Image 1 (cartoon, rainbow over the protein chains, first blue to last red):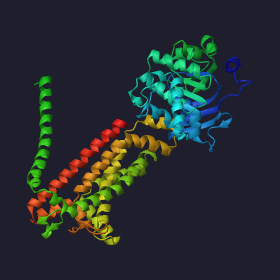
Image 2 (image 1 turned 180 degrees about the vertical axis):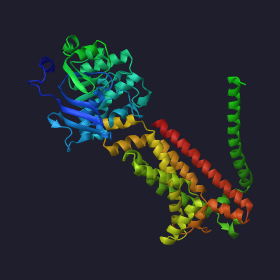
Image 3 (image 1 turned 120 degrees about the vertical axis):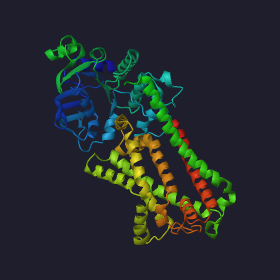
Image 4 (image 1 turned 45 degrees about the horizontal axis):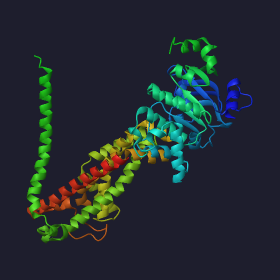
Length: 269
Length: 277
């Protein structure tokens, strides 16, 4: 069933026909003070897909990610125009429950940041805030989310050890587990492998293949090779503008824009 | 002339070592000197009896009770206000004239001599509010004195919590209050506790301010609205008025041992706490 869905998603160009988009970014612009970081971006995030976002530094990739779960609201200088919808609802509507939005749109950051607590507490922090109190339910969440990020076998006997004592790659998978325990709908991965060794990177990419059965995944990456091998669609950003977005195979083999082709062949950026 | 780096290195190390040794030596000398003169006169009776003939004989039990009351009340009043101010300054407002003013005010308060606080406490709490010379007047005055320390140490501790923790907490669906209480303050707790312990030490040893606000009654305070003499003030009066130098040293020994015990147990608690976190 999910495979059929994936095929539909992959074969249908934007805007998708039968499958409604999970998130829709409409004419979205963002600025910090005087500096405009995103310029009228239009983008759709489909269910059960891995969307890679590539582009050189300061092309607005991270700002877009942090706009999708309203983390930029914390910046005093931040201002925006345009709309972002999740399942057809404007996430910037004044009545949006922002903590609930962030549980639905979970994020993993570039630098692995376990909180200075045990592995168990790191994972149960989010669910507890969401009102899960049953010890059994929490235990089950810890196990399932650690399994989903391929960390369970490495830490199952020492869930009470500090998350900060894990290796970098393990820490990042702990951060992924922590977000999965929220049972989100969209996963934002902001350069999750930038500080990791190739084996840890492979494990994260492996996890993504499984995860896309349930989630929409948005992957920001500086590594064009990673985008090429670990995504279904790719969007190329440059100086805050979306230059090109399409199926990954197409974008990498037959880019429509000169600047896209320059970037993916390594002529700049 | 150029001195070889290995020699400058050796000179620098020996200068620093000497200075550190001098600092430690002075501290050790003061403590040993006081304990040397005071410990022989310390006894169970000294700790549990009331003073007789102005403190020439008898013990310091009422002063221990008075000190505990003033210190506990002062810290219980100052700690919540100070920590809340620090949280407000760091998490609930953006840097601006207002925060600069609060911070400047706190720094000025920290530099004011305690006798001035005593005078203020006397005029405001004792006279204007009609609290009289009492434990509560003394505690409120001392609370004002230690407030800046608690604010600044808590602020530093909260600022030292990595920014990324805040992003993580928000990302996992925290409200601002949940982020502050469950992540930021929890991580900053050892630093906040250090500030509180420092202020406990200052409250215990404060003399001038309590003299003007808590008074110097010799009896056991029956309530916080009665006057009481603290240990440090008792020491001051015993030595200043030449009542009894032996009892003065004994009182000072009690004070020093109490402060060392508080600091040591605080460090121990903190290490345990941090180790668990």
